[in-house]
Length: 315
Image 1 (cartoon, one colour):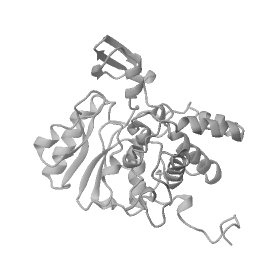
Image 2: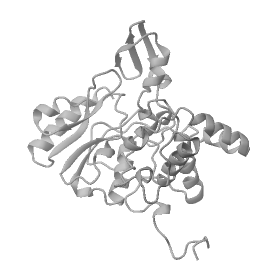
Image 3: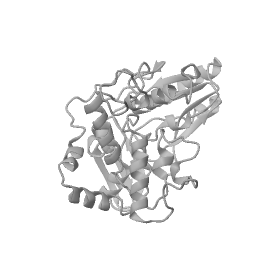
Image 4: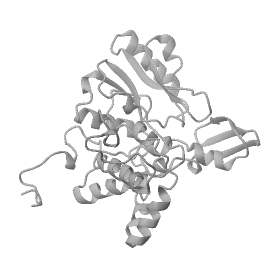
């Protein structure tokens, strides 16, 4: 992936020069290591700042919602699947987009790396299979597979599912991973154990809503947590209010979540709220044989009603 930057810049400059797009949405280097930031390039000079490496974990579909311009967007596998959902839910039109497909071998987890080195992380570089870290306590190198984000380690859709141009040949998909091993362990718990598990999971939550703000699926004009009439959720740090927020937000993503990891990556206290969305992802796969964002030809199973629905709950 370290060789993608030049190709992304080349494609972006051509698209802007030919007036096929009004801007390119990609990434540029952030002000601190391992924190690349979204970049909106409208000129050739802006394009020169575009980069791609293993620190591009933010889901760029989050920046497409309700836009009116013609946009070029760099999209890895999970980004492209969320773009599909945006199109299906009429948040943007397909003809507005030129999708620059980016084959992905996973994004690195900044928390894992910070926990494996001494002192402050000062610089992170990479080659195809190795991550090199310089910190105030010395230098260390890791195999990339050792420091991947958890969602990337079990991803089976690493290539874009929809695109107009690709920056490289598709990468091999992972076929030997168990995506739901951790979910099954919780399913096997008795109710008391599950309550204790989620009680511990959410105990550090500060209700900052970073997970909601980072999620490309959270685009309601007014979030349910901000409603006053009726008030669905209290504003306190009461554990019930915290659980209600997380569970309801997860249910909003049912049949839509692509496990891009944006929520967990954004959380300042490192809560693994993917355990909620992964459970719903597993249920949609088991009950409806559905995975979000793989096709523009079908809507999510919880998004429409069929008169011949085999269940009789609505009749």
